[in-house]
Length: 298
Image (cartoon, rainbow, N blue to C red; front, side):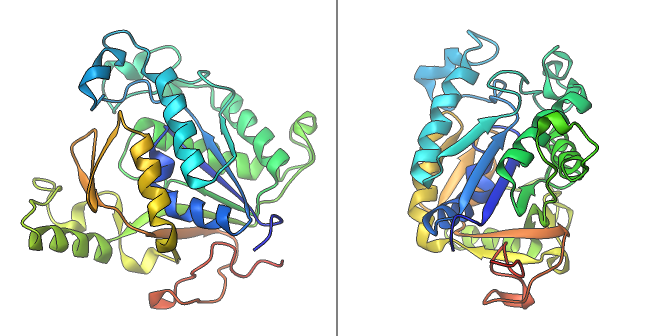
């Protein structure tokens, strides 16, 4: 793989990239591809898991966002990714908090952003980077977080407008993204993870959420189209998660998020193709692609 393969990932908060795509990012960066991360907020509303840093939280000194820039730098260093940016610049859009919370109403909340303005910022990045592949969330943002939903809207609109030569020529020459993927978790994989935790004597992190069939971020296996094997780079993903220390506590093969859910740290990451032509099946199961660039020239 060479640097003429270019991947752009659009995420809502620092740490989302590592949880969803850390192994993928590390793999492609190690293989010489150009990997760019576009993060939409600083994650100011995140809960702080480190007691000595709890005064950084939004309801105290409200300095968490600035601190998380440093955490993101550490994570990107661990993954080998040099090109990472914030939508419109650091601090333009604020973490909106969970749906229905007072943070949703704050003036700079990303949830309240002028969509045209936000999309224009993203178009500028797409036209500069000229990625063949863009990765973001599904229309529900994976699990319904307002910023994830808004990141989805911005990314999808930016892909469309970036390809239109009549849209904002001041933002650079038009560029047509070949493939767009949404992050996803196959239900079968989630079920296996829960069973593995049970075998270790661990309680299911999804207790009270109902059956795996009802977990919002898990999708039927038939919707999955790609499985990227980044297990050779699992150590980099682990180091990147540790860099996000205010948000993630790493404990062996599992990590706990600030919303008290736990997920197995997976070196294989899953995707759903929603734009572009599906490439040939690779070594992944179920006829899935094993490369996000599968089927693309070069």
